[in-house]
Amino acid sequence: MFIKELIEKRNRLVDKLDAIVKAAEAETRAMTEDENKDFDSITAEIRSIDETIAKLRANEDMGKIVEKTPGQKSAEETESRAFSAFIRGNLEELRDGGMTKTDNGVVIPKTIASKIIETLKEICPIYAMASKFNVKGDLVFPSYDDTTGPVATYAEEFTALTSKSGSFKGITLTGYLVGALTKVSVSLINNVNFNLSGYVVTKIAEAMAEFLEKELLAGTNGKMTGLASCSQGIVAATTSVITVDELIDLQSAVQQRFQKDAAWIMSNGTFKAIRKLKNADGEYLLNRDLANGFGWTLLGRPVYASAAMPEM
Image 1 (cartoon, rainbow, N blue to C red):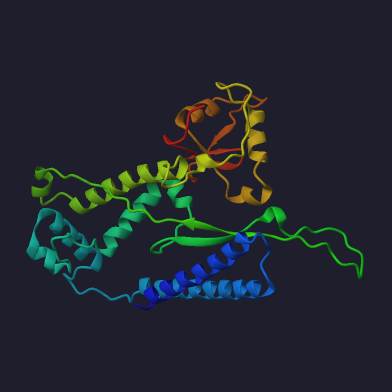
Image 2: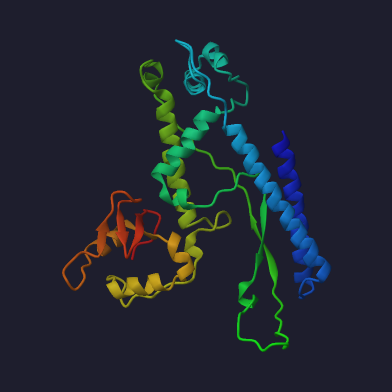
């Protein structure tokens, strides 16, 4: 497939970027003029590949609309029936749905996989907010140290500006395999009126939501690094009480350019404590917002409660 070849080419280009960055890091120096040119050229080519891949995938998903004849099943219905047949062990109906059972199992139909992902997004807003990259193997991002980056200041005409040497480093995202096992009782398997496919989709999505929410927030040593590794924060006056001023201080600690997509994520116990807070007029600080996220907003930003967050 053409997309696979583009991804492989992209990964090779990323390796070249990483080599340029590591060479400068190893010698503790700024990148040379030639290295900068190569870096910019490779980065531009990677962006072009990313745009092409996105358009190719959009073209794949944008299938033709075909009017069904009476009694004709859609691809989603056919794949759903085939998936249920796989669980029930009905080999004849399994083949009719385009699935073939082997010693290693079967490949889940695309519509079923999409349903699991969509259900996962609905029940796990933390996962929905995360950036996702559909690539195989490790993904390396070149990162620029903005503490030594460009600084704007007043300048005199014909007077040279003082230069600073920035530094690049590579951030590697490593892929891991995650599995979830759903058991189905014999009585449900034998019940032909039971929506077996929908049941398995929901159970798998719930298991993945619980796992990914914990990993994205708390992480696991040696595997995923969660938000718990963030060091920036506000120390409250006591361990058992949260004040309105402390919440305002915490929100203000986030730079203004990041406020637009910011959200509050807290444990159920912390959520309960904040829910009881009132302002000087006796009004609750936490507001209901049924059209947004978890249904609550705090200081204008959405609120999400998670069992993966530490208590106060």
